[in-house]
Image: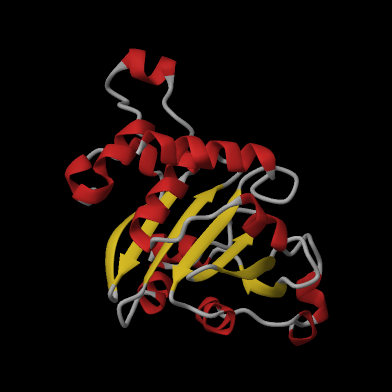
Length: 209
């Protein structure tokens, strides 16, 4: 498990110019196609968005980049505010598939969520500070504990923990079986990547609702 975290730490360092530079969302879906992920996300082309909603000050949409990887799809956006609601994870995981999301934003809210076989296994808006660790699936607990910060332990808070994004990516691999490499991330910056716009704050609205 430790080697898996180290792998994703190295991947993030290697491709930091195109992949989660200052936070963002990573969505992985095993057994899915790019069109299926676009549909689940509610992604649309820029020509389908009213011009006034494209004003950056409106912050209504974020661009997702999607590419096929071995066994599924990798999708990312770079704000950390267009992460999918849990219904998207569930939809993408039906029929024996699996999906996971790792999100970080400028407020340092690190989310991890996952689903398998149409069932939400886990989702937490700030997973590294989770109070009830019994909610974490047993298959993820060893990895989860590497990023977890015990807010009741001053020493743990001061010392910190392993990188929550890298640990989240490692947990996503355990759930989906998709092993991401640097070339997968680089394809997101290529002309072959699919680009769509997705409405922001859908997950935030779900939390508030």
